[in-house]
Amino acid sequence: MRGGGFSLMELVVVMTVTVIMSGVAVVAMSSTTGNRAAIAAKRLLRDMTFARQRAIATGTGTWVVFDTGAETWSILSEDPSSPGRAGATALTDPATGGDMVETLGTGSFIGVELVSATFDAGSEVGFDWLGQPLNSADTTLAAAGTVTLSDGHQITVTISTGHIAYVAP
Image 1 (tube, rainbow, N blue to C red):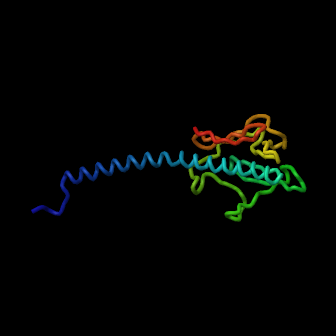
Image 2: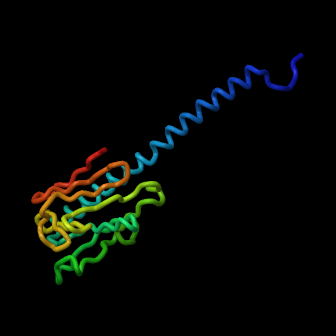
Image 3: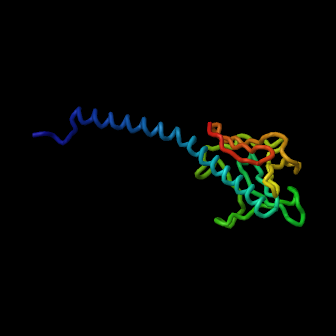
């Protein structure tokens, strides 16, 4: 008759399975931040494309403003009666009813950082009624603009055309 304990073989098998599962969990967790950064970059691509398309469709300047300290970007629209960046206000997100602001480092984007946003000498880009990118001085970009997120995920804006592209690391 056998006792109520475990045999040495059963303990070794359980320990081996536990070690294997721990190794898989560590690998999965380490790639989670990279996946979150890729998703955040794709969301930024979507938001910037929306801003450009909105500017073309409405004829009203639309801006994407980055704050690297607060890890946010916002989508703003110019006031048609007073065009220019100075009078632009946050658009309302139809899904939430709140301002169109995205914050990194929290919620589903925990661990993701807004490393830099460079559009000539500023950290914002606007689009005019032709979809051309503008710098913070409200003039056409002199050089391609880039936004860099964690793990080297980048969004680029081409001068003249305003084409927006995601560059994976």
